[in-house]
Image (cartoon, rainbow, N blue to C red; front, side, top):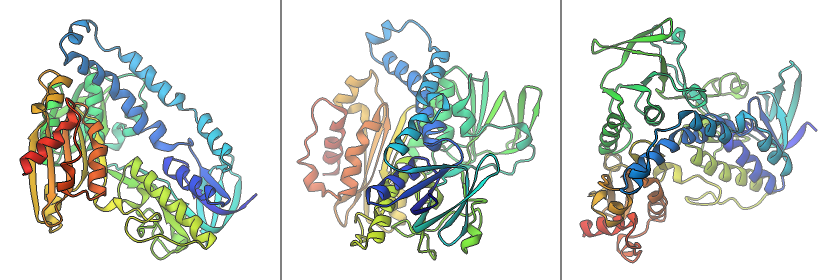
Length: 468
């Protein structure tokens, strides 16, 4: 079978969800993948990175509670952490994911896909064979993004790690230099510092610069408490490998020497060589899409997930995928299109309601706009901060608990425009904040959402009291 209703290029979590929703809408679907079914999230990003982070975080959590701390008598078993990571990624075997694809009635085509015409895709397999697929209704590009490699003299020849090598390494190096202070850089710094690796972070700006400023400040202190060195406001001028070490010169006149160097300076779209130029687009570009994820100017082509550069997060890619798969099916079936804001067929939350967790030391959980972004957007805002350690549930959660919460209120509408939590285990506070932001729950109504005592969620009451 070479003719389908829908062809999905890329079988990562985004592509899988597009394919599944289109199939559930009664369409025939083929999904094309040239690596592992399940994509980066399953094998080189979200899942392995959190597996590498969790064991040391659990150990620190026990050490932060009297009674449990006294029971902790050994050091972290790093080899066991890597073995657990291997189990998490099923030893990089995608058989389970393939079984799921086949079980729901989606055809899997192995090979590299290239657009060759209107709703036409050529797939070249590993043996050089070619198969031409045609789509009656739509093609969805879900090829994700890759690590950006900055043009630093000597860096490429130094055989640097990207996030893929960092999450799939078999052992921890004795020393690791990390270029970049964003989410990937911070999380991998936390993970490897937890293994006892000598970690140095080099960042052009502050850590987690897209978050509230206090988030990066607290994370820097957290990393330093783990023994990491953090250099902000500097960048690498050159790099070269000598035997088993990489030497980097920085623009402040200092040098960094490490066994490995991880480049975590941003992402680039995986759209090079997939035939965008054949359909009037520019090869290698991010895809510009509308809120229903349809590529602007090409009414049969969809760009879903990282490739559209709207929100480079797995959960947002899956959210977009649900909207895209449903709207493709609706258009194919002549059904009503719900494309107004917050409708079934659009990804409205991408704009101002994106939740995100950085699994650092301490964790950072946020949703919506920062205070600076809200002000830049022209909102009349009021900012309310509160020390998380002053909440009874937090003080019970860990001895000497320290963290911070910020609520950004849109005063005109009296709803929350953004929330940020920094502290141990704050990721579990995020969904309530996301509901409040997405649902535009009025501040006055939030008083009636009573937090159970004594839990960390009592932070909501303290923020509201401070706001009043």
